[in-house]
Length: 265
Image (cartoon, rainbow, N blue to C red):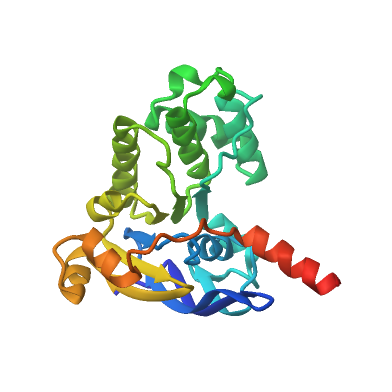
C-alpha cells in the first residue's frame, strides 16, 4: 500500500481543562476522498487547524506528505491547499490579483505564474471574470476561486472545511465534480468536512466520524451501515453520535482565548 499523505498518530489538543481532541489516530492515502464528520463541538475544526499548522497539538504527531506538521512546518504547508469555512479572499482585489498574491506568497516563479493562474481560472470557469473585483462575485463564484487559489502551488492534499455551506444545489454539484476530477486525475488527497451527510455518502471513499473529541467509527459507507445495523449513512451517524441537538461548536480560537485569559488570572 502507498504511504499515507495524512498521518495522525495519538493526537490530543487541550485548552486548559477542556480536551477538544482526545487521542485520535488515522491515515488518509493518495487519491483518497476522506470525509471527517461529527456534531457541533466534536473536534473537527480543531483537527483541521492542527493539520494546517494553525494550532500545535498538545501531544501526538501529525504528518503531511511525510513532513512533521510541527517540526517541518514550512515544508508541510507546501504539501497542502486549504479552503476554510469562512471566506478568506480580498474583496477589493480582482480574481486574478487574489491568485497572483497567493502565488507570490508561495514563491511561485514568475515564469510559470501566469500559466498556472490562467489554467486554474479556466478549470473553475472564472476566466471570463479574471478582471472583476471579488466583491461582485456570488458565494459560489468565491468558493470556486478559493479552490483555484488553493491549487496554485500544486499541493498533494486539499483540505475543504464546509466548502458548500450556503451554496445552491447546482453550484454544490459543480464543486464536487471538480473535487472528483482532482482525486481521479491528479491523485490528490481530499480531506473535507460537511454537515450535508448526502454529500459525504455520495463523494467520500472513506469516512471518519468524530464525537466529543474521539473517533467513534471509520470506514466506507457500507461498513458504517453494517457496523450500526442501519440502512443509510444518516442512520449510522445518528446511531453513533445520538439524536440530541448540540450547542453550536466553540471554535478553537475561542477555546484558546479562554485558556489564555484563565492563565493570566
